[in-house]
Image 1 (tube, helix red, strand yellow):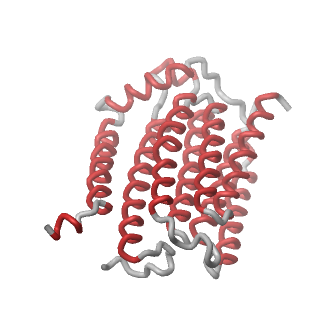
Image 2: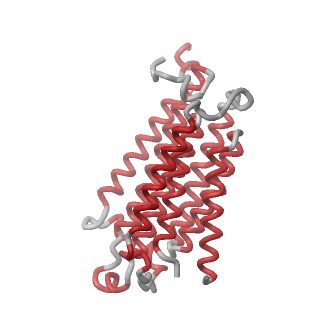
Image 3: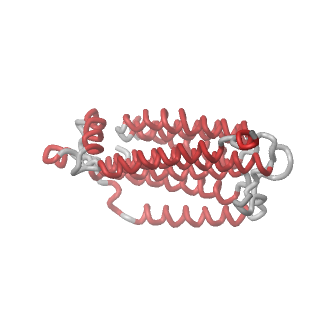
Length: 111
Length: 174
């Protein structure tokens, strides 16, 4: 039996690794990869809490499983996909105009 | 130490080790491939949580679409920074301290509460999860509104991405 805290500890460490990637990397695509790690950590948390607290058979025989956890995870998947698509479009467009994607060299979004 | 615990520890170790490689490796394409390994590890954790549907969705959406998109973008922006200069900001140590503090805070919170070892509830209908999820996503008493809003979000992202990254400069000159 795996205690719930193991999942939460894994998600917390994954989140912090993603946070370091967002704050410390220069390349804008590397920043996006850090954001993806953070979103995956949140997904692990959501599913772990749903499985351990909300998926019990007592609740399911009464009114069906409460599905708020999995629905939240589906929305997070969709939002992550949309955000990566738009973020990469912006990065590619900025690269075309300035030939650099170092985040500290693209100080303004204009032009 | 049951075998499921061993499997979970292996999956978690794989996820965290490859996530560490994502944020520290120098070459962007290697970082993208390490990200794929990390996402596989997360899919394995989903499977251990008896959410097999989400494990498959993770592989199809995150690895099959998002990671491929990231690799495409890396290949389209190649001629930058790979071989000249550092890959981290000059204040990377501030980032390390910040994430260490956040990690310490989260871990302290997790380890301080005593009820984490409650037994996991019985889940005989693990196979019903996609059915119940589908019902919840389209029922008016369920989550049909977030579902539709997510669809609009994806449409807006699609149109926006095409417009932003599309090469309309050549079209304008004609």
